[in-house]
Length: 105
Image 1 (cartoon, helix red, strand yellow):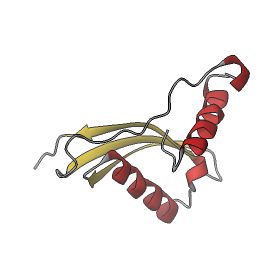
Image 2 (tube, helix red, strand yellow):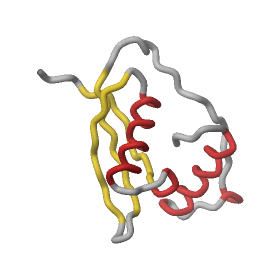
Image 3 (tube, helix red, strand yellow):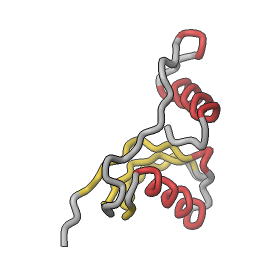
Image 4 (cartoon, helix red, strand yellow):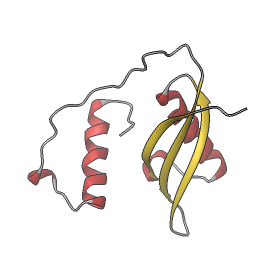
């Protein structure tokens, strides 16, 4: 879950768990909330992002690639691009996975 702070991260977690797995907050427990830091954040990498978003016409799955030094930077680029091209706000975007992709020249 990519969120600006701990409270929003917990809220989005329970929202997505309720939608995807039919799990309520009373039946589960969050053990830890932590921020992920990159080991080598001075090296530029390509990141592939799998996402699902809701538009006016339905739910769409998508794969996009971004070039950045960190995963959080790539996700910030994703949110900006989705807002510009698809008019999708952060609240309707679900990031499924982020992975570093080898750069082929």
